[in-house]
View (cartoon, helix red, strand yellow):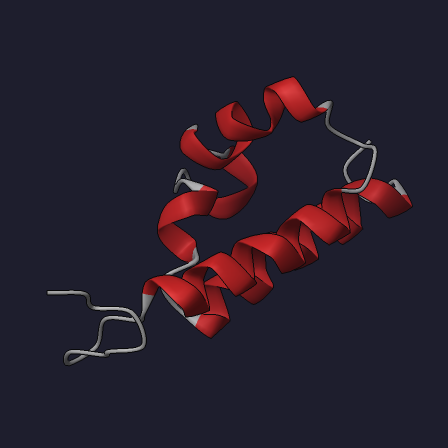
Length: 79
């Protein structure tokens, strides 16, 4: 049975997570080469308190944290 479009408890649908990942990819733009983007999502990131960006996509707040990190890097805030 497909879970597309179905939420259970606190979990988000795969569609929602895919949309959030797309927002993060748009924020990344050309900063990370396409072949390195999976590594970015899967690696623990010190700028996110050691959490993986992929895990943070489970919530809107977490997604915003990832986007803010990327925007900060783009603006030179972490240079």
